[in-house]
Image (cartoon, rainbow, N blue to C red; front, side, top):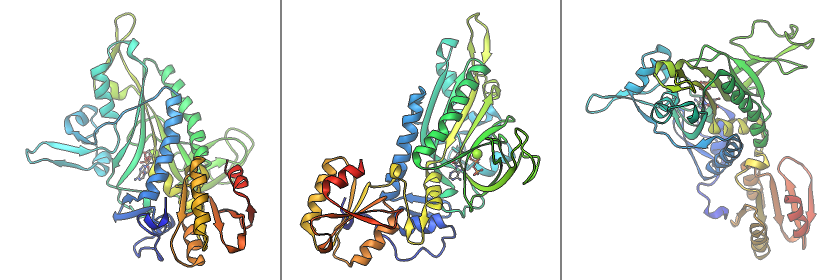
Length: 409
Ligand code: ATP
Ligand code: MG
């Protein structure tokens, strides 16, 4: 990709309404654009990052036997009446609900449990049809009252939601625990360390859920966790206080602000019973289905990466999800740069080549702001070699093209 053709270009200053760092940086660097509070366009750079985040999630979930599908976002009221959630005050607060011109009521999806149950009612008869594990990546709508955290809290945002249906509680927890172990691996591949935190089930279940939290100064959540073992609870359920002894070991409890990037819910049989969706067991008896759901917010993950990985000059993306592998800059060595671009692309690397006729300073500033992990420069000063610099390091090296290719691998 040539920078001259990239839409749009970076901005000199952050938009005046932006309060949070992720909002300022991602808008300035050309990853996102705000339409209104809590509503963003993923511009080509942001879209590339979110696609890479999605691909990592997809790979890991497919390994567990989960299958990808795509469900509608416009939901008729009657399905939501089956579970009883349509009229719950805490649901009415976040769900966009309205009538069409025929006076029929609809809602915009803020989650999909009811819709998955409706699918199961049509396709599940006996225990032989279970378990079912399905997920999709799709937009969720939530009437968020304080959408001021940039892309961390949208009123319209991207979610990966996975649903699993089982014959027994034991089987449900087997899969639940498998996903609980896989989520930290997913986030690690994306470049984020998470704490697995016990929390309440919110509007989803009376049981505890597990949240996946990234420690971050500007996070809206507060968690309490042990400095020795993996005990961790959300502020809403933790009984003790900072400095107290860990309930599981002799460690000490610490507290921190954090961003919730994922949440999983062992829902149990309530949805099945309320929506009257049953399966027949080996003895011909009707039983309720054990159900669980598992969310990750890829657009919130993009915002979290921006909050966690940056410096005074801009963003610093982890290699696995950066929009490009290499940011190539030529200072009056156009022919050489074009050759390097071609060689890199031949070897499977994604290159953003800044082919503009602007000052060196402007090109370097653009590269720092966008935050691609590797910057390559060819100029009179580099002779026959290429200057190789990592975005998160101060020093640079002069390398041959072969050495650059070796390092990128
Ligand atoms: P929060 O407590 O931050 O409002 P939540 O607990 O209501 O979030 P869940 O229903 O658990 O959210 O949603 C699953 C995942 O979807 C979250 O872990 C998060 O990554 C993402 N998510 C939820 N709400 C938003 C939002 N408003 N904007 C962006 N991502 C979101
Ligand atoms: Mg949650």
